[in-house]
Amino acid sequence: MEFLFQLFWKGLLLVLTAQPSEEVEALCSGSSCYTLHWGRHSWMEAQMKCQDNGGNLMTLKNQKEALLVLQLLNKVPNWGAGTGMEVRLWIGLHREKGKCYQKHQLLRGFSWVTGGEETEYSNWVREPRESCTVKKCVTLQGTSSSQELAWTDGHCGSSGDGHPGYLCKFSFQGMCQSLVLAGPGTVNYSTPFGVATSSLAVVPFGSTASVTCGAQKQELSNVFLVCKAQPNTNTFEWNSPGPLCASSSHGCSYSNGGCEHECQELDGGLFQCACRSGYQLGGDHLSCIPVDYCSSNPCQGQCLQRPGGFECLCSVGYMLAEDGLSCVDVDECSFPQSPCEQICVNQIGTFNCLCNSGYKLAGPDGKSCQDIDECAGDTPCAQICVNTHSSFHCACQPGYQLESVNSTSCLDVDECQEEPCEHSCKNHPGSYQCFCKPGWILAPNGISCLLDSTASTSSPWKKENWGIPLTQEEGKLGNPVNIDSVSETPALPSDSPVQAEQERVSVSQYATSQPDVLISPPDAEDQIGDDNINNNNGSSKQLLYYILGGVATVFLLMAFALSLVAYKRMKTKKAKKKAKSATDNYSWEPDQEETRRGGTEYM
Image (cartoon, rainbow, N blue to C red; front, side, top):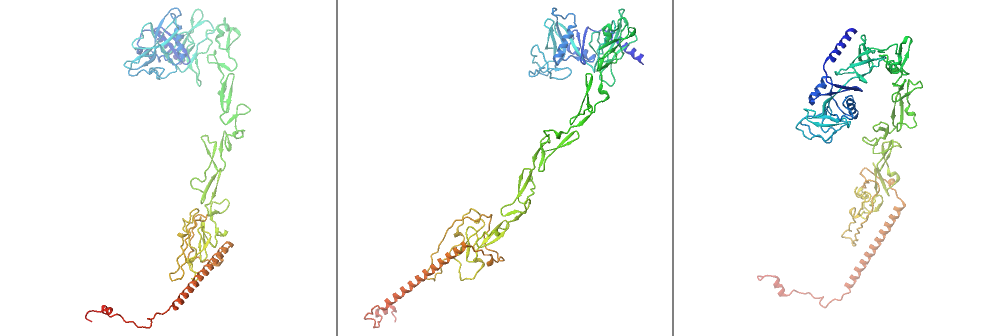
C-alpha cells in the first residue's frame, strides 16, 4: 500500500513539473503562501488563474502583508536599486458597478475579493475616482528605485504600462519546516498551488519534496517525502525520518548533521540528533518540539505548557495546593474585606451573600442589601405603620392606643377616666362626649357648663333641660362658636308687670382638643345619676355667683313693684280731694233741637 501511495505522488509530481508554467516567485509565511506572476491579463483573468490553483488575488489588509510583496520582488533579478524597474500588479481590491466613492472609509467604497469592506490598512497614491457607472479595479504600482508601492484605481481590462502582473494568496491548515540535509545535496518542493521551488522557509501542508544527495547529484530513490498532519496534534511534519544525505565522512560537521538542536557523534562515523531540556525529537528525527508535559493530565485544574515544564492553574474560587498540582477551595468569607455587604456564606468553589432580617439582596452583583419597606402594600398594622431601618412599628390614631408594646392592634382610650368634663362624660370609640346637669348648658369649649338662664326652676326636669349640644363642625378645635346660634334668652310674659331686658351675648371660644367630639344630649336610655356629676371648686363658685345675681334681680323687681303701688295710691287720694261744681245736684235734659235731630220728620 505504501508503495502504491509513493507511485501516486511521484506521478502527480511529474504532471505538475511537466506543465508549462509562467515565471513565478513564491513565499510562505505563517499559514499562507504568496506568489508573484508576470504577464498582461485583465483583473478578472488574473483572479481566475489564482482560483484555478486554490487561491485568490492577494489582499493587503495590514502592513505585514505589504512588506511581503517587497520580499517577493526582491527575488526578481531585475528588481534592484539602480534598474528603475516599474511594476503594476493586480491585487484583490475592486468596486462593482453601481457602488460609489465613500470618503469616510479607508477602502473608499472598494471591497476585497474575499469579502469585507473594512480594513486597518490602506495606501492610496491619490483619491479614487468618484464615478459609479463602471467597475473599478486596483493595481499595486511602484519602482525599484523608490522601493515603495501604492494603490491606484483604474479600468479592470488592463494593468497599464510597466511590467504587468498579479499577486495570488493561498491559505493552508499548517506548514512543515524546510528540510535540512546532513550532507551535500539539494531539495526541490512541489506545492499544491502549482509552483515548484527550492527556496521556501516553510512548506505548506500537502507539498512534496525530492532530495538529491552528493556531488554526483544522486537522487534518493527509496525516500518519498510529503508534508503531513500528525495525528492527535496540531503539528505538521514530513512523513520520512532523517537524517537525509548523511555520510560517515562528514558526520556532524556538515550542517550540524541536519539536527535542529544537538548532533551527537556515534561509532563508525554515525551520528544522531538530540534536543535540549524541555524538547523532544520530532517525527523526522531532526527537528525538536516542546515536550507536551500536559498530555498526561498532571494538573487537577488547567495545565499550561512552559519551556522545560508546565504550570497548573485553578478555576475561580480555588487555589493551588502545596503540591502545585491539586486545587483547594478558597474561603472568600475569611478575607479581611468581605465580598458581601452584610452576611457571607462560603461554599465549595464559590460563596453566597445574605442579608440581615428586614433587608433583601439588591444590585446587579447580588452582594448589596437594601431595607425592606414592610409598610408598603398590605400593611401589618391595624391603623398606622411606620417603616424603620430593618424593621417597622405600629401607631394608632388619636383616641386610640396600642394593645401592647409590640402589638399591631389598637384599643379605644377611655378619656372619661381622666375626668375631662366639668359635669358628666361619656366615652365613644376614638373620642368622648361631655354633658351638663339640668339647668345648665354646655359651654362652647365642649367641656365646661354654663347656667341656663332660660330654664324654669319650678318646672319638672326633662331630658331637653340638659346642656344644649354643639354641632360636630363647631366642636372641632379652632372653630369659633357663637352662643347666639345655640340658645337665646326668651322675653318675659306680656302680662308681667316688669319685662326684663333680654341679653344677647356673643362669645368666641375654641372647642375641645379631642378629635371630632360630638357634644349632644344623652340618649333616652342614658340615665345619668348624681354619682356621675362631678362638681369641682370652680363650678361651685360659678353657681354661687349666679344665685347672688338672681337674688339681686328679685329685690330690684320687688322695689320697682312697691314703687308702682305707692304711685297709684297717691293718684287716688288726689282724685277724692277735687271740689264739686254748683251744677252737680241738677238733672240735665237734652236740648229739643238736639232731640229732633236724633229722630225723623214723621215722629
